[in-house]
Length: 262
Length: 261
Image (cartoon, rainbow over all chains, first blue to last red; front, side):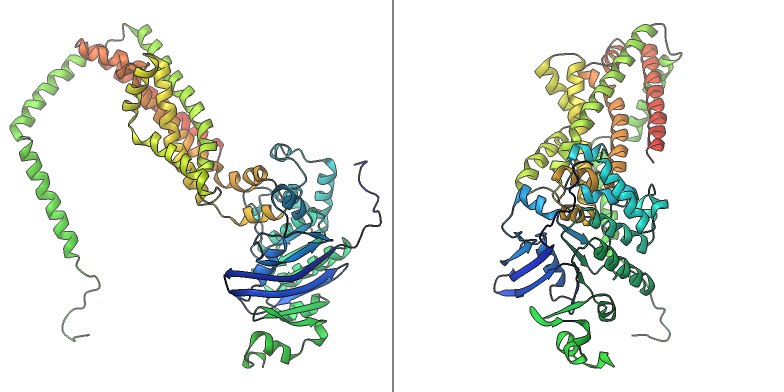
């Protein structure tokens, strides 16, 4: 605990996507020349029709899917050129929240939250559950802030959808990431829970000063909770601006058609 | 197509399957005829069997010390072989799982598992008796290979059926490979692994009574010589002990599974 840094003046946490292109089939890019930057306390929603490559975009950021060309910088470090142990070390800086939570069902809530520290702890210590006391304290205080302290020792499969997503968010925050990616974090949840999860995501990333990048289907939720919207269609960015500027014309351009807007 | 008077049939008659069953039945009759298995032959067999069983009662437990020593050796063979077999199957199964490992890793391990499965334990036992000599070592090696063949294959299949979602999530946190295995893979398959292992311990107990017949240690050797010396009352005692042993092991493995529910 004595070695924890005293919050020195470090460069702002940021994500920079530079001319990212991804082709699953050669010559047919699903994403082409995507560039944008997110830094500091900002939350950005990515909207676009199903199948435009929103999930691909987010998975290219932590190289779960390798991009075809272009560069991704997380706080200045180029992720795309990294491999093996260096890639793993860089991934610790990128938190991720999933549509279907992706918890380990048979492990306890505490174990799932501590999974966020696996990149920092040796496999042997992780296996023996001997995490540093600092990690354990952090996990407890996070569990308290997401209201699941009473569930610490319960198995993840005994939780409701909303509770599971809270655990998923806590796991990502445990990484102390420089950017938090969320891939459709509310799509498996009911409307009320969706709002609560968005509130939690935004408030936690604000207090921990982590830039937030969310893929989201629900345009209203995006407008309500983020301060910037990026619209993707036909493989490229067709809108990038504050939610207030997102007009019906833009939505028509992004999703096509117009009858659904009535 | 809905004729007013004809009854509509909800199921299609499978003439091919009916013909298949008929053919199978006819072949069974033909084969029995070919092997000269007739009713008279069966009656002679029954007669012989009655004489045999008559000589088995009462079972003769007077050489109980020999019997007990043999039983203990049998149990030792089974437990040692199961311990090593289970321990080796864990990495072998993991390395044979095609959803976690690249093909150049899985295929040698899948070949190894297939090799372990290709021979019946008796054949392995004969091979090992020739290779390392008479005695329990040959039996232990036999059952280790049998265990790897069984648990390794089922364990690899269990791993191939897991959900990859937690695996993806943990890879995204930057977790090292072994941590991903320990946290995202093992919790999903541990229950089944314990199930396979206790079943294999059971099977090993049964098989370790048999490997002795070819000289690989355990109670099978005594059983075989009792056969050859027409020592049928002692034979009955051995058979009863084996039944008791298997029933006890069945009980224990049920209890073990309860602990790991």
